[in-house]
Length: 282
Ligand SMILES: [Fe+2]
Image: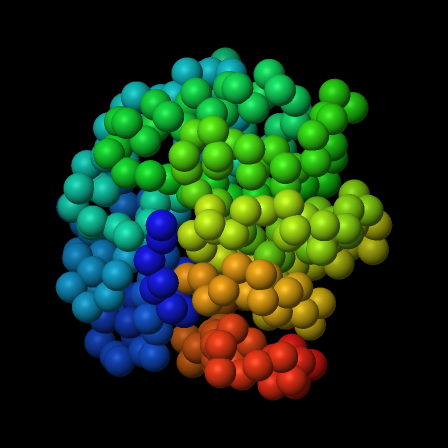
C-alpha cells in the first residue's frame, strides 16, 4: 500500500546548502508542510531543487485532526496545492489536536481515546483525504498526560482509525518509547496492536530525560533503547520508509547520515537477527 522509499532525513534549513550543492547519501527527504505553504521565496526554491533529485514527503503539524473544530479549509486548500506541486509519495500529520475555538496552539495534544473521538477522527480523515486527493498517514504522538475518559489503548485506537478511515500509520518509534515510559505502557504490546499493512513510514528521534518523565525534544541522537525498539518494529513491519528527525542542536549533515546508517544496518533483511543485535548494541 505504501512505497518502500528507503532511508531519509527531515530536511532542515541548516542543511539546505549542503543538500542542494552536495551529494548526500540519503534516499529521500521529509519536509514540514507548513514551512512551504507560502508560494515563492527561498524555501520553495530549495524544495523544487531537492524535489528534482529525490522523493519528498510532506509532514504536517497543524491539521488538528482530533479537534472538535471543523478543519481549516484555507489550510487544506494550500496543502492540496502543495501536494499537487510536490507529488509526494507520502502525506502525513499527527493523531492529536492543536486548536480549539479557532485558536491555534503549537503543541500536539493527545486525545481521549473513546468511541466518540474515534468517530470524529475517522470522519475528519475522510474529509481531508477527499479534499487533498491523497491518502494520509497519522503519527502516534508523544504524551505526558492521559484522560480519565480514555478506555481504548492508543495503539488500538490508531489501528481502528486506520482501518475505518482507510488511512495509513506513521509509526514514531521514539514517541512509542517516550509515551510508554511516561505512562507505564508496554511498547511490545503497542507494536503488536498495529496492523503491519497500515504502516507506511517510521520516525526515529532523540528525547530528553527530565527525571520525572521523558520529553520528546528531537535534540539528541537516537538512544539505544529506541534502536532496540526499532529492531522489534522492523522485524514486525519490514523495511518501512524510515527517517531520523532532528529539530534542535542540529549536527552536521554527515553526522545524521552516519546515524542513518545504523538504521540501515538494523533494518537490512540480509542482516538477520544476529547482525541486527550487534547494530542495536553498537
Ligand atoms: Fe515524529
